[in-house]
Amino acid sequence: GTAAAAATKLATQGYGQVVPQIPALSDWLDLHGDRGDYTWVIPDCAAAITADRDLESPEFVVGSQAFRLVIGLVRGYGQQWAAVWLEAVGTQDWAAGKVVHTCAAVRFTLVNRIGNLSHVWSVVPLQGFTAEQPRIGVERFLPASAVTQPGSGFVVRDKLTLRVEVAL
Image (cartoon, rainbow, N blue to C red; front, side):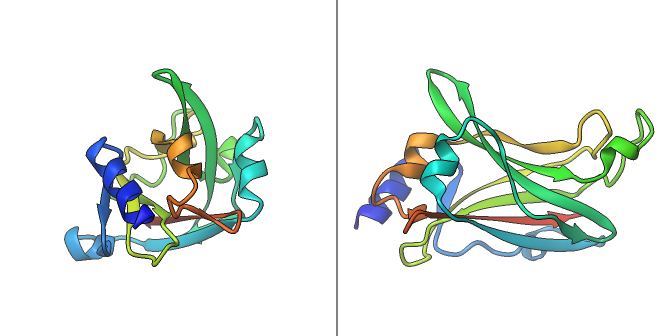
């Protein structure tokens, strides 16, 4: 179908991987710290994507640290890209140079809602969050046009679903 063709095209162009099901981080990494996941459904997606500002999810907690997801648009290589970040909350109170929560892994999943059979994702190895660098993510996660393309399955009934898994 249209969703499968769009997903295959994204994968062949190198925008992550498209798989029927994505195993949990703990299924393929030996993790010993805190783990958590959060799913953010963005309503009124068309207006949100065209807005010239980053969108921030409600806060969620992994271990003892509050985080939020941030999605925005960045320009590069002649087009606009959907960018996603995990942002540590409260870093303005941290001492300069302090590194907090060196992470084992973070995975961003843009959920394909047509049949929930394919996802596009990236794993980002983390060095830690600092007051100077509170965000870690993927600046060229997917071309914005691929996300909003009719029939792609990412935007359905004007809602976009972004999921993150975090291993601290």
